[in-house]
Amino acid sequence: MSIIGRGLLGGTLVAALLTGCARGPVLSESVYRLRTDATLMLTGGASQLGEPGVRLPPVTETVSRCPNGEARRSLRGEVPLRPAGSPALLVVQATDVTLDIMNGRGYRLAAPPEGQARRRDFTLTRDSPALTFVVRLRSGGRHPMLTLDGSTPCLPVDG
Image 1 (cartoon, rainbow, N blue to C red):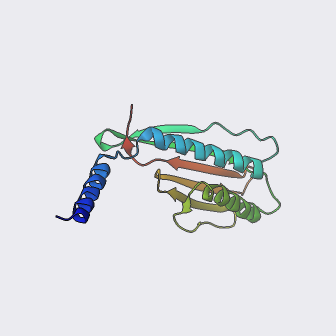
Image 2: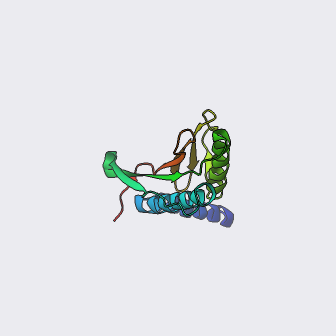
Image 3: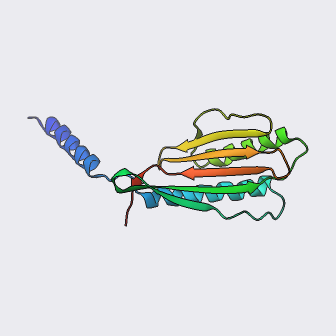
């Protein structure tokens, strides 16, 4: 075998070993990013869309058990929105702010936003780490609200 052939074979072997030995994501790493991104979205949304000095309700978190000893972490946060003259305009503004913040964090729309003038729902995802956020905007009634539901996939529990 030539020197070039041995070099290619050796490089391929090293790459295969590294790929085989590399560990995938674990829950704690994904949860850290989930919490960070949710916090940035909620505080950014509150500063741009909420009443001045608004206090955010506490974020709730749950852990769900998955097959094979894995787990999924989910969280929910809300931003009370500042009422606007037009409920439809508020939904458009809240959509734009949310997409701007989350696109800056590496998220993309899973599908076009759905809803009517006073309501809109959309899902944002990212690949690494794999996270999903579902955004629900409600501008009708006395208490307009942005609700953010985030989750990890089922992942190995570390530690």
